[in-house]
Image (cartoon, rainbow, N blue to C red; front, side):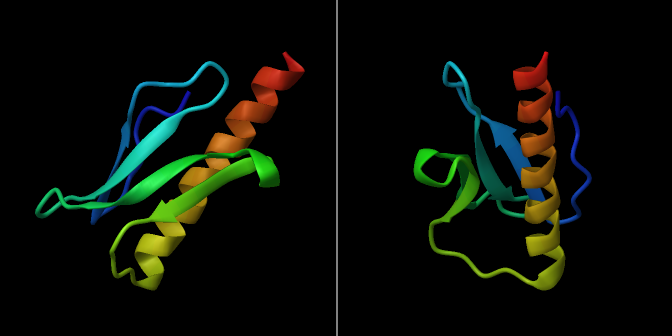
Length: 81
């Protein structure tokens, strides 16, 4: 289970989980602005980042990328178990 994610500028906040997948809001740590959501995208069979209106640098995108990879690893472990 993903408990803590170390990111300097953004927060990953889990919303009410769906039966098989999770949904997270991505918020700016400085002002709490909603940047987008990470949720399961069934047509691609993976977690995707859905952007609202935002601007990202490489470090923030790397944090989002790493977070989604951890979600996929967690999901694969549940399916195998």
